[in-house]
Length: 365
Image (cartoon, rainbow, N blue to C red; front, side, top):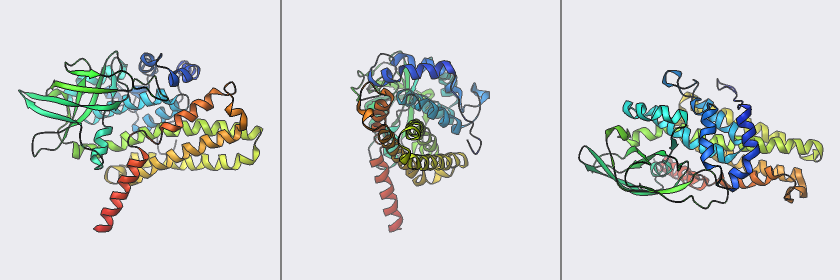
């Protein structure tokens, strides 16, 4: 990688496990309990975390590359990775030392799963959706009521999740953490997804859940969210990057052997992908996306479009053989995985709406 992010090579044991079980991870819930422990055992959650805090060093760009490396083999596993590592990033960027002392070590070891839970907050920040959870003062803390319809990595063996909540009148919204073990936290059954079924994706209801100051990630979501959004979206883009790389690599092999007329298009798209990744990594590194979100939104949209083109080129490179179940199940899986990229929150439609609002506001100024 350019600009300081190191190339990530997955440990052989993990790479082999993902390659062997990618289809089951996508189509069944049988392996949901194994994903977090295997990623943790390979040391992936420590990537981009300061060594002084128990990590292996580097920065968010390295975490993006690690998520991409996993996505090349299984989007389900990378989706879990993204949710978990994004929650770790919240803990790292929180001013609350007590929160960090409580959760960082068990998150890095995979003892507990981390769930980002801030898709609702990111939509709220863009003026797309109201906050879904209320926080009412109660004693020395707050009582939480409400729910979130879709969160990934709500591991049945135990999780901690982030959520943006309304605050007292006149105060900005806050971002808090709540644990599955807390009274009043009700996890639904796994959502009946088309794909990515071993991702522990479910809804959660909060019914009179009590939290205190140690559970507060930030008291000012409006100031904090723009600063963490580049990591949130950058690591999310890692899923697109890895899936596009895998599909283009397959297309390149196929076109070299049988469809050489497509080879130029494949190589041109590989170059476009590399340039988009370089732009994203540079913007994450120099901080420009903290004050200018639009370029990052456009990169997320561009990467999603590259994924769609990549799987189409892989299909064309295979020809009719791709439609045979016994030909290459990796293609069928990538086709399903690619269908998820445009709709993961914030979806392409939501990002395009946000860009339109920004353009309209700029024009009216």
